[in-house]
Image 1: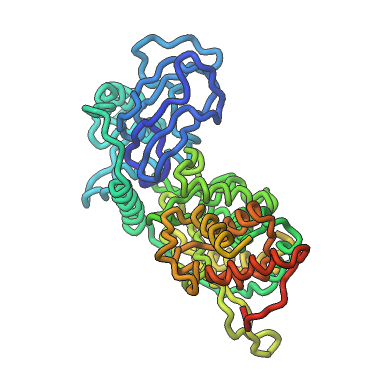
Image 2: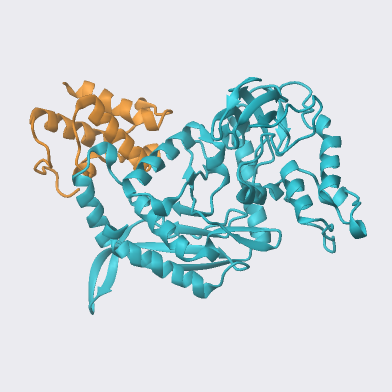
Length: 396
Length: 96
């Protein structure tokens, strides 16, 4: 069961899209799971052949539980009681994903609690397999936990994991609603507890950007019209590339910069609640492509058919209040990310241009960032960079 | 196409983004976006849907006239009565 964000604890398998013997390719949708964020299509992350499906539809299993066994290309068939191997369905992409996993234990350690000594491999495996290191006894040097210790623990626990007595009934909208509130509560509480936020904001004259958008849209068919949000996304994506300390994750006491820029976009749902799917490789895509992908993401987010990779690998987040909204939004960082950029509503207001006060459409752009990973000086430079890009929209 | 048919087209387009829409409780002379809690993306989806159904392509500068259900229907009625009009219609109301 992949972790689809810092706030996910478990998921219910709804449907298998493959059967034993099927050949699968990286990116294929192999299963559908029901989570607090709606119904998610689970993609597989390597090529191979499905050997066994280990979880029946209807069962609720914790993040990290093995859903299926897949034989990698060129691998010998596994013995029938194989422990989870590298070829099992795993959370996508090591870095951002393992980063999300500690959310399963959102309680802060009690004061004085020590971090168990463990090798990096053991730590990574524990995160992946959902093993709590603090309850294990190490067999390594000085009692340190080794990879083998973690794998033994995961194996010992494995048969218990899918222990749902009967398939749970389909969740009611109210139950789903409550689950989403709890997921948001867990992630946001963790954020406010663990992340020392600092906040900056700046007002940006978006007159040129809005004029430029109007011109563009006049020449575009209705299906290809751009929204201001897509300019914001691109400006943030390009800026994030120049400010690596704002683009990545804080995991195990250290910042891990991300190579790519995947911007999470906060999408509010009509029935209440939010989801934050990722737009991948934002700096490299033209505005038209971003708009199409954004539209597709918003629609699927609201319909509840996002894919696992879209919920798991954002490297920073953008929230845009749109119109009608409020003047500014100071965001709460989505752990384990280290920054969220907020765009208030566009407001016409007095602005000084060349010594004269004139009415201009202004938007307040804010940055909430993790002070462990960056400082206000760089944060301010980041906001200036975003402003500069929005002043020259034709270059986006 | 009469006003009732146009009204139905607009309501159908709105219900693609606001499925719980109850036409009987919608006040025709009050802002749609606040009543239905739809954002700019939802609104754009409605415009796309109206374009698909009626073949009326609504330029951005006319969005202001679509703020209420009555306004939306009036606008479509005038656009359909003056075929070939691609761009903005002369304004009858004051302001947008």
